[in-house]
Image (cartoon, rainbow, N blue to C red; front, side, top):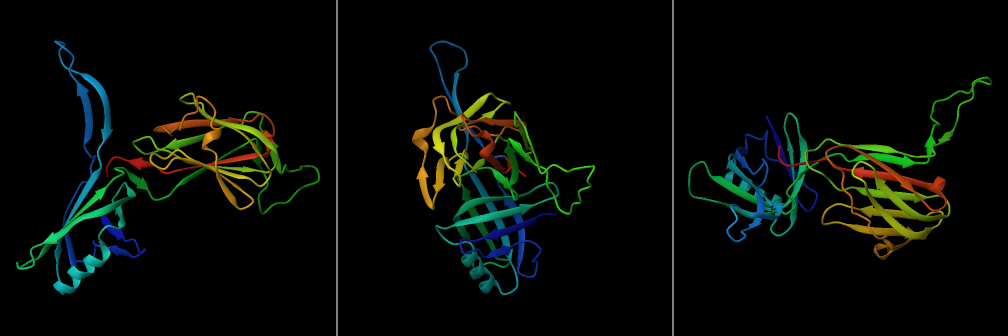
Length: 284
C-alpha cells in the first residue's frame, strides 16, 4: 500500500489515494531512479570512447487516475489542485520511505466521452531527487551544553553547566542514497575573526575571511541550485560571497557518516554551528 498526496501553491493538501468513492489511482510512473545522461566523445582509432561528464536528468512523474462519483465535479477539482504554471509538492509514502518532491504540471488530460473516464497527470520535477520530510539538525560548538531540566545539585556532586572541547567535532549521518547539500547556520556570541568549517571525511573546507560581531547570524547553503552566503546583522542581510577564502568548496554530505569541525583566528568559544540536512533518494 502507498499514500499519494499533492500540495498546491496555495497550501491545499489533497490525497488521491484512499478515496475510492471519487478517485482510483491505477498507475504512478516515474517513482524509480530517473535516467542519467552520460556524455562521451570518440578519439581517433581508439576503441570505445572517453567519458566527459554525466548528470541525472529531470524526473517525470505520470499519474493515471480513474474518476468516480460525480465525474464532472471531481475532474474540475483536479484542475484546482494541479494548477497550471505553479509548483506543487508530491508526498509519497510507502513501507520504507516517506518523501516529497516539487514539480510542475505538464499535462492534465483525458477523454471526457468514455465510460470509466481516466485522467493522466504528468508532472516535471526539475530537481530529480526525493527528499525526506524531516530535516536533521546537528550542532557543532567548542562549548558543549550540559545543563538540563529537571535538575538537582548535591553539595558534594556538582553538575557542570557546560564543557569546553578544544577540538570540536560532530558527525552527520546521511541515510539517503545520494550525496546532499546542507544549510549551515552560525551564531556568534562575541567577536570572531575568520571562520573555516572542515569536512574531515573528504578533506574539504569552506572558509570566510571576515570579522563577525556578537549577535551576528551567518547562513550558508551548499544545496545544489540554491547556494548562497548571507549575514544577518542588526536586521540587515548582506551577501558575503566575496569573502570566501581561496580553495573553499561548497561541500556536500556524502552517503554514510561525515565528520565536521571548525576553526577561527580568534573567538572560537563564541561560535555555534548548526547543520540542517535532508536525506535524498533516487527512487522509492
